[in-house]
Image 1 (spheres, helix red, strand yellow):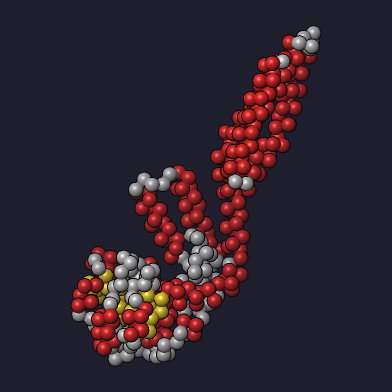
Image 2 (tube, rainbow, N blue to C red):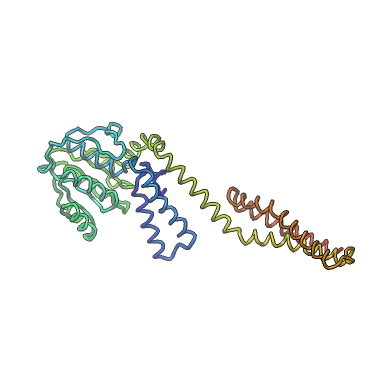
Length: 352
């Protein structure tokens, strides 16, 4: 997940940033411990390594695709369906008419401050598209607006006094619609051309039926994901070395954590083998072999210890493999059975 190979847009980087933010929140709330810290740290480290391995073959993120679609709309290419959006390979945006001057067009409004809107704002700013940042609170909006030379307005002011915009990109949480039928109708009436609406909200920030009734073309997350999935297999093939590196690291990490978890149990099992062998030798030396001299006794004890060590090797090696590939229940069942067997053998020895 951190490397973006399971994302809707293969190889995107925004997910790793969101994972890091969630991890930092969890650590601040003291809701994760050393194991989770290790796992997330490994995941983020692998994500950094992936960016080096995948240099030159980075797939565009969903935010890249959204910005491309806005640029196509502003470039006068009509309003194609998501299936007709020009393909984007290796992180390159769709070709744009470089002679087109966008200075006089209505701005593009970005509603909500999120990784998606930040990326869209940066890409549109590169093409000198006028922007307006709309957000509920000022702090994050002012920072983003300053970085792209835009103004910012509060969401309440934008809804009460809509302005002409050429496109809207929405990515805000909350679970409620940011713009209703009244606001959409006003936006449609104010703009010389129907604005394009790109909605990253899940659930949607704008009701699809309300956008359709207002005569505004809307592209939602489902449409962007469908577009991304169309190139998913190609991107996965290009990122095969990354997939192999992840699998290799996962195998090493899984083995390390599994052995760490059962390490004391393995040590206890080896000790049990040695104790059983030593006890049997001691019984023999106190019984039928009591006539052996000191040198012979020492040799027998060393032989028993060597045999115990070698005999323990096979089950210990099997347990190491089981700990990595089998379920924890299977490993626990082995130790439960070993304890039960040891108890029976101990009772038999007492009787003897």
